[in-house]
Image: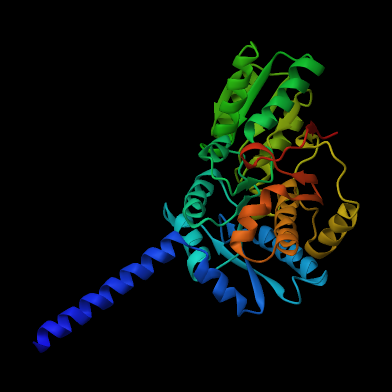
Length: 362
């Protein structure tokens, strides 16, 4: 009889544990909210693709410092929890899980490439935590239809539309080359531009994907284009741009924003005389002072990629101040936020993309 009693007791305990686990799966916020009520700080997760990405970490920490200097949230400080996704395939998913369930962050800001952004999105889709992407322009991230996924940068299709309008309509150029500096993000940008050109009835231009610089320069020399569009990131991009300017000064250079993502790691001054897409709304009046402070502290101007990261962290802080610190409140209300940042007015439309009008930089 004693053995039967002990077995039944064990069975009831096991059933209770299963029920508790089911409740946590159905209501992923409850443990998170209860834990944070007793904490002094509000945690914001920050995912980066590489632990060498010191510039992105620094600009994110600068944004958090400014947010705390402005009062934090109801006397509580905002704390940045940073995790790197470098390592074997799938580590991006693991880091996102750690942020959600171990660190219990209120939301996640990501400065990731497309592959890792997809992994992070899968985690937040199940955990119902807001994910704000500041770098990847992969259009398929929005087409996953996760209601609490948002993007700071214009996606590849939005950027391609602006580039095509200027190159083919305003400048009346016909000899164009598309160059991807990598085999994923840049390739996605190039394919998005080619797809849009087909829809517009334009001739599909020649494209080069992840070629060695010497090979690429030889191909350019063989058939010099009037305009070149660069996409994706690589360690040699600065040298490539310099070489193109020297060898082919007549070529008009354009770029997708993801070309600047690697500058956060290389810390090299980003090239000039390249036209990129930007918001048509005026930037915050504090942008010049931000750039000056960044230059004085780190010895270089912030790249476009770093400006979007700064805005992403600042927007997360503003959302917490406006809607509260619980993940549930942010999930329900984040899509309604409007904020003036370094990259212009920030508001979100369909599928979590920014609803701004986009133009080319001067």
